[in-house]
Amino acid sequence: MHPVMREFYKERNVVIEERRMRTDSNPIGRLLEQFITAAFQAHPYHRPTIGWMSDLNSFSASDAQKFFDEYYIPSNMVVAVVGDVKATEAMPVIEEYFGRIPSHEKPDERTTTEPPQNAERRVVLHEMAQPLYLEGYHRPDYHSKDDAVYDAIADLMSNGRTSRLYRALVRDKKIASDSAGFTGLPGNKYPHLFAFYAFPMPGHKPEEVADAIHAEIERLKKEDISDEELKMIKTRAKANLLRGLASNEGLAFQLALYQARYDDWRELFRQVDNIDKVTKADIRRVATQTFVPTNCTVGIIETAAPAAARGQKGGAQ
Image (tube, rainbow, N blue to C red; front, side, top):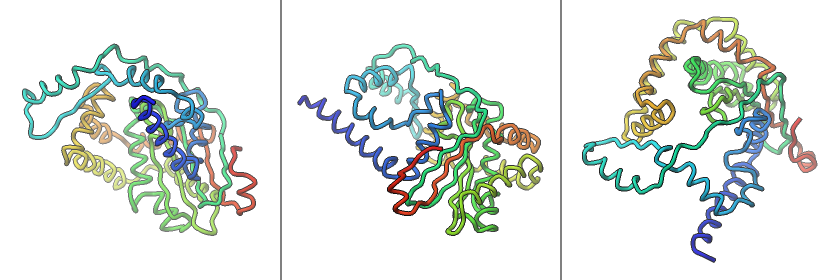
């Protein structure tokens, strides 16, 4: 076998084994895969990032090379160099190495638009595993004028032991070992999900933590958050920006990310201004628009007895 082909099959086997460990042999991985597949029925987010096992078993070296040649090109690339360097010295080195890569126009990134969801979708797995409750709501991509509002809600609900979900479900009710909400599932380049989850404590059911999460969501819709909560959200946003720029690695990553996303690295620093403009009314408005039953996909792991788990390895309902 040619050395290149031998290396290709070696790497493919690594990816197959990674899928087995992360998804096929992991109850949470299996739930996430079926959950996302249920939530996205038209958009490419419907497909797992690592691919279905049949994809991994069938794609060829020429398929991989074609994908690489289409996407890994200078016109689709951002390079960031930070540290004690001079542009006059760095640019010739960058041009020497990256200039060798053949280029063409950026690939067509048009995708199918996910149609509005008009009914709750539900996935239930019966596993010999810890129970888990997960629900997600469709939201716009990061270009949305309300992107900072979603970040503010995520911070309010989930940032540390003072967050609303932790205090309500973990500290006060003691019905969950952990609970949080987050945005960006499964990615945020395109319209995606704002998700909430909780791991029930022994003796408590997923339905119980679901009710507690919904109570906190209803608070967002019906009551303005406090002045202190809003102040802390904005303070943490500024602190997070500074922490992210504290190292060369963090600085390079952030600048490259925002240049790739917005075609302007300065947008990184505008994000703090955007969240500083978020109001209490914005949070109530976005919560009311987004967190509705018809826009919700639910994923549940129910702990099954050994015999039941063997009879039903997992299924969607």
